[in-house]
Image 1: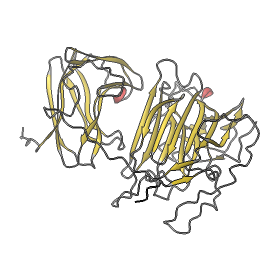
Image 2 (image 1 turned 60 degrees about the vertical axis):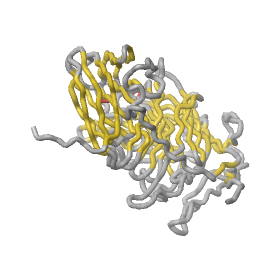
Image 3 (image 1 turned 90 degrees about the vertical axis):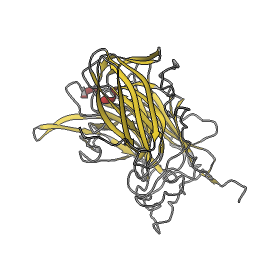
Image 4 (image 1 turned 90 degrees about the horizontal axis):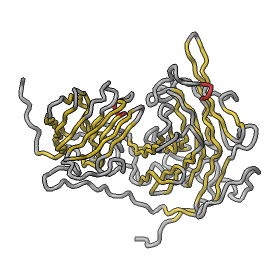
Length: 475
């Protein structure tokens, strides 16, 4: 065994041209050679130094037009991805520089008698590609149903490990215009599709009120996401594979060059479509700067961490504090967590061995009001039983499931509707886990979008492994 760490120097990783990125064979790695790293960056507002890093490239958007030595327009027709409505254009109506900001503007028009939307998307592909580094961007998002701004990264050669999601994707920031108090950082990878996501919800104000700084530190064996300098997500256990084949050697697919892109989408499967409340006069995504830094060298001799699976307690229960004997905080991402999204309003508390959920607004989606516990061990081919007691101050429907937050949000136990009545009932469900092993199954109670704000109570929540499923009897 070589006792010296393998280290790759990245001072020479800057930009690549299309010709640089041509492959001699399908198993050859992309070249990361680029221009002289000591070449002078164009004059303008200087980017600040960051200890331990060298400035690789930056754009402060000081001029009057977009710098096409760094950025390219990325036009696409409506429906290009995610069922989005906008056409991405090369028009300066949709992409322009003003008052020290790059502006991506969504415009609502009419075509063939129907609403038609245009917007802006730009990228640095084949101009400022790099492998490993710290990306820092300061931006202000627009507010409005159906608006979806993003700062994200894709590989220069999307086909090297295979098309999305096998190629990998790094989302530095996404905000839904319908809920501008919440921002997301996400990494996508694998086949089957997997993702890991961090969420930041502001205690006051919104991401549309002012500029905020979004950043990611991408290293061979770890990625870290920050908002305004506060760490909120760390990921180190990704993978990728082609269906039916072994996984590629770690840290694939994130051991190739990526590029930065910025866009303002309209509509789509996640944010939903605009409605009469969406004000397109203010549908502008403002980017103050984008800066990319890099260390002198990175240790590439990294290994994927082994998965640690939670052990059941002495009663066989995988749920922590399932009897609600501990009055734990519900906003710390440990054990029980109470979450609100998309118009959901309410609170939860543990008292007298009972979890009580108070709803003021049930929101617009099923997960608008949500009680969850993650880190449940789910093993392929194993049988499980879910049990809990539940009642409400008046009849209220809700959903229980076990989801996969780091495996594309698939369901190990499907969304199952039940009705809480005014009398306590014990609910029992059994299932066989049929997917690949996952140490992060998540029990969810989803209480949103049901037109009810009745107070709910839970007791005696259990998820346990069983030898075999109870035979079903004919009714």
